Length: 68
Image 1 (cartoon, rainbow, N blue to C red):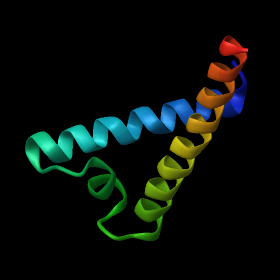
Image 2 (image 1 turned 45 degrees about the horizontal axis):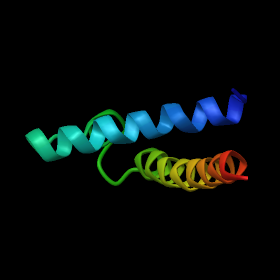
Image 3 (image 1 turned 180 degrees about the vertical axis):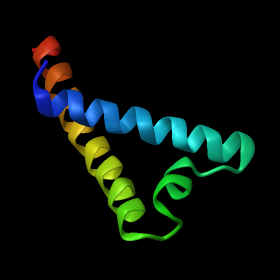
Image 4 (image 1 turned 90 degrees about the horizontal axis):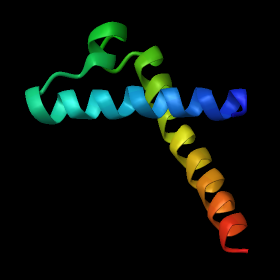
């Protein structure tokens, strides 16, 4: 597994756990650590979103290779 793939996967796990906490308990872990609306919290949210887009393209390429 490529280092970028591992990094984006870890960020997606962090994002998933954070959303699980928000949904279940109304607790935003990222905001609690970095401050609600802070530059660092917003950066984490952006990185999670970019990681999702990266993983979508990676998964699409892998599915095409399997089909192909």
